[in-house]
Figure 1 (cartoon, protein in one colour):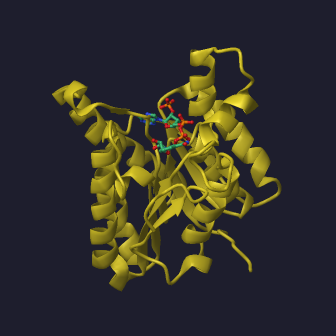
Figure 2 (spheres, helix red, strand yellow):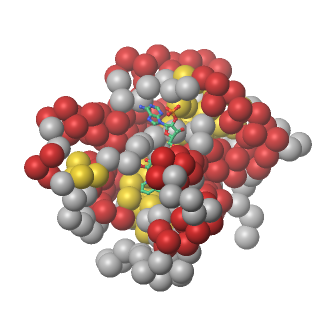
Figure 3 (cartoon, helix red, strand yellow):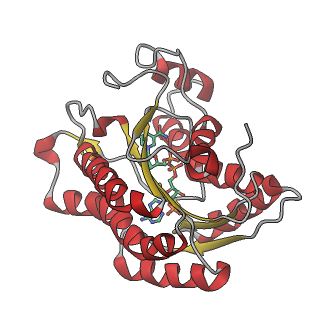
Length: 264
Ligand SMILES: NC(=O)c1ccc[n+]([C@@H]2O[C@H](COP(=O)([O-])OP(=O)(O)OC[C@H]3O[C@@H](n4cnc5c(N)ncnc54)[C@H](OP(=O)(O)O)[C@@H]3O)[C@@H](O)[C@H]2O)c1
């Protein structure tokens, strides 16, 4: 099977590290052009160089944009710049996010608002900007990166599980509305996947175990496949959904979790 993205332009939020960076590399290696969004300019320029390297000889364009997607104005400005630089946006991956889960009683109004701004409103705003062009060209892909708590929330999982569940509803509603225009909208639900956020957490805990021991401890008893996922494994599924190979799949939410979720 040929999974190619030649001629497509993808806008990926949270693309300076972890899953977002892995998706950007996979898309570029498959011939796609990629706009990378994140807040920190220094990390973005390192990421841009890595993505360009992954693209190899492919005829792609890679640009990086410093943008806080939890705010409306930067999203609108950046979208305008991306269209000016690339001419169009065919693919949007709403991936930016940070871990935010604690006991319900301790979640403040500010926590709720911040989480919804980053994980729900960022996707709403970017989809609203990108959808008209996708519909006009009769080709589009949106992938909303959520987590398995969206379908199966656990204790101490707010505000994230609630923001993510809203992302599921957004995915389904947009898939129905846009299918007649050949714009496909899907969600990918992360379980536990090795990324920069786990490296930061390992450093912060500083218990003296190696990073490999830390990852093995995280996976033990939680992931039926017996290990944390790799960002590349996640990126391959995203690339499939965003290519022509995924042309009959819309409105689904796929667990990419090594079997961890209790529900399908
Ligand atoms: N890896 C997992 O096991 C796991 C589990 C559950 C859910 N997820 C979800 O999967 C997505 C990717 O996670 P990851 O593990 O790859 O995390 P990561 O390595 O920490 O990367 C997060 C990315 O998001 C960007 N970002 C954060 N806040 C932003 C903002 N306000 N505006 C723009 N960009 C922002 C970060 O760059 P800047 O800081 O420079 O902005 C970075 O590029 C997130 O939505 C996360 O919640 C991951």
